[in-house]
Length: 159
Image 1 (tube, helix red, strand yellow):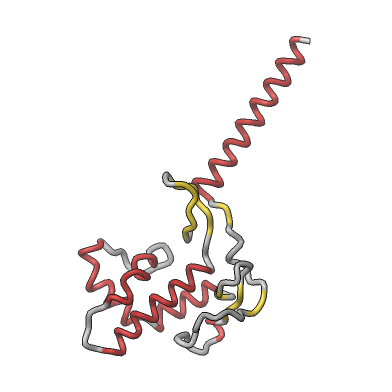
Image 2 (tube, rainbow, N blue to C red; image 1 turned 45 degrees about the vertical axis):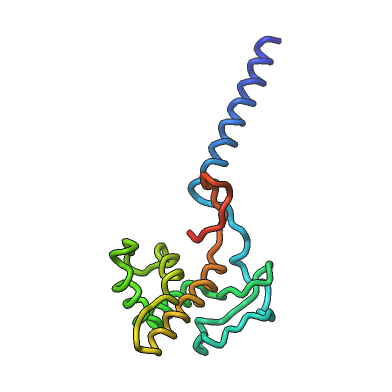
């Protein structure tokens, strides 16, 4: 009887440890998918997407939360790096020192999203490109969401 109780307690303890490790891995390292990155159909919402060039890589779909997302976010991001190159370069030049900006990429785009519309230049075309960069990155963010546990609670962030 004693052996059986010890066996049950040991099994429950081992199971608890395994579940705890899985939770820590998912919450702090991998992240839980918010399932907002999967297209469920064509986008029919009210958002104006006229600023996007008419290219196949910028094809928009709708996720399960009725948000616009890119069908192929990687291709869209790669093309946007070319389409908004002047604005990206100017954001880096103007804000690199003040915000310790790293070069533009998938892990650093959040700062560029916040700063793109704030460009100070006399060139109206580049100022518009900066504004369009911010709009693009806001849309791109919808395509890349995951849930992570932070010190402040659960937060939706891009990987």
